[in-house]
Length: 239
Ligand code: APR
Image (cartoon, rainbow, N blue to C red; front, side):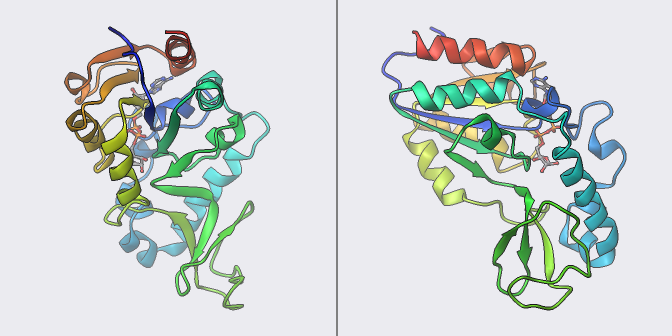
């Protein structure tokens, strides 16, 4: 049985692999982001405090790339948006990605557990503001009206991801858990499949190749997300 009957609540965890075919680098694949940067230099509070300019530039470059005309949602993002639109039950995307490709594909029920590239945050008020251009030490904070208080609205290593209690509830209620394009290297996202199984959910993994978590899943859809995710969505919508 690939897809059980009477599914009501679907939780979909996405990682960098779903955006790879849109032209956005993953982190740990060959040629990935972490080949050129030390994670702790650009994705930790310590790194930001030590060299804020490097960190601002790292996220400014990724924010600029995300808004290039050649970067757009691929068939996998679009298929998930169609699933949310046509599926009779609830579809929630919990994404580790900080790009806005799920939104641009038409999905609405999205939880960015690692933050968003197109948002910045005041370190004093914790208020979040949209940003499309460059963020740096001379950007005037919209709430404090001074410079130096703003940081990328990204969850860095050592920080608590967004929405964990909501995610916990979603996993308790879900009857189908799908993981797409994530290496399963980073917790707590890597633990979600176990939580879903404890709730009795059926679990599917979509990836280019097996991951260290593959044995936890009921079945695999191995291949490119742009091919396999539309195929999976078709199976769910017309069982
Ligand atoms: N289709 C499906 N899967 C793909 C594709 C593709 N076209 N291309 C790559 N993948 C898979 C790779 O096989 C790999 O398992 O996507 C995964 C990417 O893994 P990572 O680069 O580790 O990205 P991710 O799992 O999202 O990382 C999790 O780590 O660095 C932090 O905060 C960062 O959110 C990120 C988190």
